[in-house]
Amino acid sequence: NGVERNLKFVQEEGCKVYLIPNLHSKIYCNESKALITSLNLILFSILNNKEIGILLNKELEPEEFNKIISYVKEFTKSDIIKKDIEISTKKDKVYVLRLENDKWYIGETDNLSLELEKHKSRKKNSWTNLYRFIALEEIREDIDLRKVTIEYMKKYGWWNVRGYNFSSQEGEKWPPEEILDQFQYYEEDLNVNPVIYVLKLQNEKWFVGKTRNLKQKLEDHKKGTPPWVDIHKMVGVEEVIEDDDLKTVVLDYMKRYEWENVRGYAWSQWDMKRPPKELR
Image 1: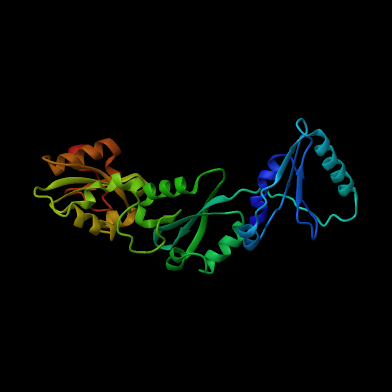
Image 2: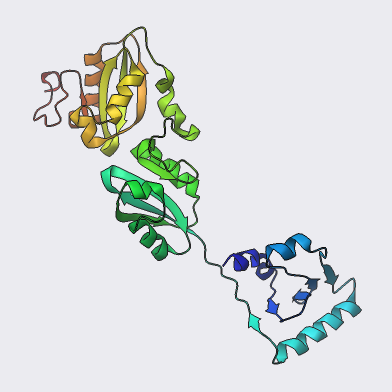
């Protein structure tokens, strides 16, 4: 499969590849160009090979080119063709796995069934070893793995998602740089004055709180406190507000996003039945 990928450029030039046993030089040609070279498929040959190749052009070297074409025509009609290599045009697909405990894994492969079997048997990745495979969430084609991974990190929280070249281990301390702006206040160990913070949660939910130590508060929320955050899971910090009233901010968000989707201040119960009297 690796050899086929490396030979794809030959196919793109409109050429076919023929393997002739015991022949050192190989020929690639179409109606206008011919390349005679040594195609070395093992590391030792690649490291020790000095021949680059000879490129013939029909317009510049018609005599030599015609000799090559004549030989190829005779050769392709003979019985000594060992193999006509078909170059695979199959592209890798990006897949998203739903795991237990609301975790996610994003990968790419050209053999999805084999990849899924490895994840199910916990032989593929340390992240899927920690969190059992639940279901194949989606498959995407013609898209960058990194882009999908960042998308899911923004949607479900970076600590719940692994993929691309981001660490597959538990206990990753900082989010990837690409989404660090969501956690810019993470680096502040202590705020001298209390601040109001707004958390963006999954399922288009919100939580508004107040603290003197935002970093510690975010760590607590990651662990699932209070129940509203445990149910809907933290995605990121929407904003941090200084010199404002917590009740006012909570009511403002309730008006903006509907009271059923926001919790904070004295309205932190996850199963609230009615809106605050200020909104009735």
